[in-house]
Image 1: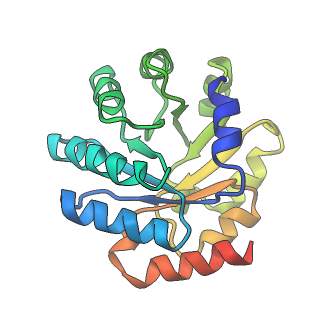
Image 2: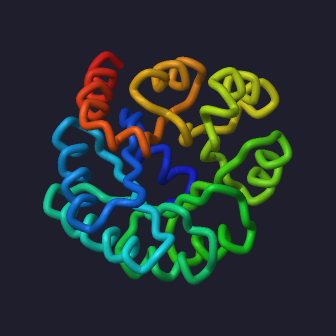
Length: 202
């Protein structure tokens, strides 16, 4: 299965992803468990440090017991691709588009979700055969950006992340985002319950 087909299946009917950046290992796993409990099937753990890699591996192990997989975030180098694969990540997410990292990720068997913020970025991703893209930073781009980009790029499938929370997530989904990723807002314990309600409404 190629990267696009993998995402088509993985994100089908699963529009919410929790991004657990900057928490210690124990808190990362706790938040992942809470996210899964309220119906958020996807969790991403950024790996910007050794502690992030350890938190990813622990979260992967916790998810395995539920039959759920975990993504590695901020995969910006070949070394981080290696770390993500070694920790058992299901796919790799990046804030931008690096053809070399994309190639390394796909070669490692990790579907790759690159960040895009311009039409040129989308065209570059398309040349690499990548249809699933991370609209980042979503709050700066705005929900209207996603709707407008679907005009010239109807094949694009967007995951909106960066400044997304329970208050604006619906706007991005209504504009055509297939998935929204919620990160720093999860420091507020009420966010997960509010996001779970949004999932039920859809």
